[in-house]
Structure formats: structure tokens, C-alpha cells
Image (tube, rainbow, N blue to C red; front, side, top):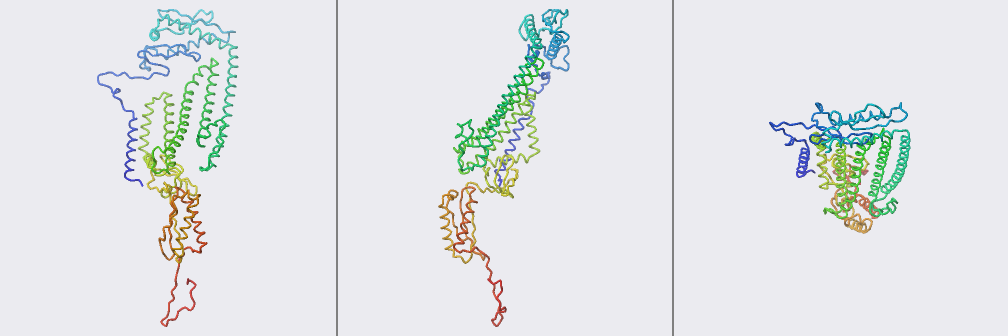
Length: 579
């Protein structure tokens, strides 16, 4: 039953959780409070790919999927009203459009072969301009202007910087034209086919290894399902890992195989992504898509794989912790016989909390990669958690009561309990619910907040309370002597002695009624063994009573005949009810 001390713990934990969520709320910091008399310039976030460095903003100029160089422009505070200043991302887009236009003109289909492009530097109106001439054309196409902002950022004179950019553009343009010739495209297609079959072959090998691991895991799972806990483990296991035969239990081996298969599965996904990116990078027309494959998809895959791998390693670590905990009794449990149940229950609860934290971290990182600030995600999560906690107080009560059940060791997984009005073996226990499997095989789910009284039938030790009714005419001394001899013989058998803590105790005669004599017998057993011991002892008692001619207790009735005043019976024939 939940006492006053437990209620204080419950409400104290609720207050602590509420206080924790409150700390995550987006309070206005002191530095963000507007002071009177001081003008505040709003901080506008920069577009993707743009970096703000004080009074300058920089970005890269990209062409054919490659970054050529970095340009700079004065900082634009309000991009909705930039005034006479061209934002740096707009300037980069104009330069990239000019480069694509020049390349398209050089590759005009009306010509039999691509025209060469000559890129030069000229000074017009005291401004350095980089332009391009296609073949023998008289006019040139302006590509970009080297500005003072570019010179300030690179810390180079404008003439030197213009010459460097001219060399980069000339090399990149020649390469772009060469890669778009017919012979180059055929070579790229051959290389793409070779890459595809290489990736497909490696993926097939990984798939075969995964199928082998799946079959091995199924074999181990069958052994785990069919092997009793008392029998030794089978000697054979995955042949690729013979050194682990004597180090892990069956469950840990299954988990290890799942971990290896997890690595192979994600290796297969990474192989296809990298192969796709490599094929896209071969063709200049699709090279820009390869950077998209290398970008967020690779990041998400790494995050998903990393958190999943961390979860798998954490499961293995928890299994090793459970074994080490059971073998060394780290917390010095008072009831040593309950060590396994209590440790298993505690580890399972820790495992569920661990999984929630890891998956929350995964969600925060993925949302952060989409541009959402982590602090805002945590703040919104804190407000949502607080709102949910206020709207569903029963859920919080479930969690707090679940913590109390685990900490106080009221019961654990594997215990047989009675939680009114249900009874059964605890099959699952977490911070929210308790699941019981009753004698009919029904799985009963009980919220932890509704549990107020628990009767644990397998805590530390158990007892058989045997009530034996015998005929009232039975010789009590002889009966008790026979039962005592039977209990001694029963306790001396090694098979049953292991299941009992002491010899069965014949308490004596508790009641004398018309139904007979009530003899009470107590048998103190190991936890959970009271049913098997009780059934066997009752069988032997029945055999003893049959052999010694002792009758089971039954109701006795007497019929007194009425007599008349002359002393004669009124009925000359006895009643059939007479006994």
C-alpha cells in the first residue's frame, strides 16, 4: 500500500520534473532586454551558405558542382530592403549564371566542335573586370567585377586577386568544355557502369552475410526458447566468432549477431549512397547533385547509424552490467535470493530510459541540421512536456509510481503477485505499466498509478499452508506421528530438499468440529517453489491416508428418536437418515 512517505516522494518527484522542464523554457536573457535610450539593431539570420564577418558577408562561387573561390560584399542587415547594396548571394548567383551562359554558347549544337573560351582581365572605368571571349567573337561577356570588399577579405591587391581568379576560371572552363565532348561522355558512361556493378557485387556479398547471420540468430533463438535455465549452454555457436563461446550467454550472443547485422545493413546503405554520389560526380551535368547526396542524406545516415550503433552498444553494456552486478552484488541487497530479479528489473528500466534519451538526441540533431536552433527545439520540447504533464497527470503518476516500485523492490519481472483484483506472473515492468500473465494465459496491463496494494507471492521465500481435514474418530497421536515421518522422508530426498528451506513443520490440530480434525502443515520453500512442493506433498499425504485407512473429514449427523410417555418409540422403523 502507498503510505505517506511514498506520497511525499511522488509529489516531490513531480515538482522536480516540473522545475526541470521550466528551466528549458525560453526565458528572455538579460543581454536581450532593450535598454532605454540605446538603439537596437535587429539581428537577421543570413541565408544558407552566407557567412557574416562584421561588415562583410562572404559566400562561394560554384560551377559544375565545385567551389571556385570566395567573394565578399558589404553586410546587408535587411534583405527585404537592401538599398543600393547587392547581397553577396545575389552577386554569386549572377556570376554563376554568366559562367553557365558562356559555357552554353561555347557548346552550341550548331557547331561541329566546342569553341575555346579565352578569359581575360581588363580595367574599365577604373574597375577590374573579368570577361570571357568565345572563339573569334568580337564581343566579350562580362563574368564578374573584382571589388574592394573582395580585396579586403582576401588581403590581396585587386590586380593580384583578379589574376588568380582569371586563372581559376580559365582552367575550370577548359575542363568543363573537355568533359562535355562525345569521347569524354562515353568514358564517363563506362566508368558509371563499372561503378554500378562494383557496388552491386559488394552489396550482394553483404546481403549473403546478413542472411547467414539471420539464420544463426534463429538457431540461437530456438536454443534460447527450448533450453531450460538450469541446463548448461550448448557448445556450438557462430563459427566466425569461436572466441566468444565461453564469454557470453545466449541472449548476449543474439544481441551481438544483431549488432553485426546492423553494421552490415548500414554499410550496405552507405555503399549505395556513396556509389550513387560517385556516379553522379562522373557527369558534369549531374555533378551538383552529388554534393546534395554527400550533404544532408549522408549526415542523416551517419546520425541514424551512430545513434542506432550507440543504442546497440549500450544494450550490450547493460547486459554486461547486469551480469557483473549479479556476480558481485554491488549494492549489497539484503535479500540475496532476489538479486537476479531486482537487477533485471532495474536494468530493463534503465534500458528504456537510455533508448528514449538516444532517440531524442537523434531527433534534435536531425532537426538542427534543417536549420532549427537546438535551444529552440529544447525550449519547445520543454513547453510541450510541461503542457503534456499538466494535461495528463495520470501519466506522471504512472512514472513516479513506477520509479517507486523499482526503487523499493515491491516486485520485479518474474515475480508472481496479486494486484487486486488480478493475479499472475509479472511479464513486463516499465515506468508506466505493469503487465501480468494470469493462469489462463491472459496478458493483463495495469497502469502503475492504479497500484495501491501488492501481494508478492515469490519475495525471498514462499510457504505452503496445507490444511488437512481428517475424520473426527482418527487417533490424533498416530496421525501426527505418521505425518512427521512422511515429512522427514520427503525432506531427505535431494530433489525436493533443494526446493525447500527447512523440513516441513507439522503444527498440530488447529480445529475440532463436526466435520473432523483440522491439521495444519507449513512448508517453507524457495521463492516460487511452493506450488510444486505443495502438489507433491499433498499427493504423498493422500497415499499415506489410503494406506493407513485414515478417512477424510466429513459431516456427522445424529438422529434422536422421540418416545411416548410409556417409554415406547413412536416410530418402529429407523429413518434412513440415521448414521
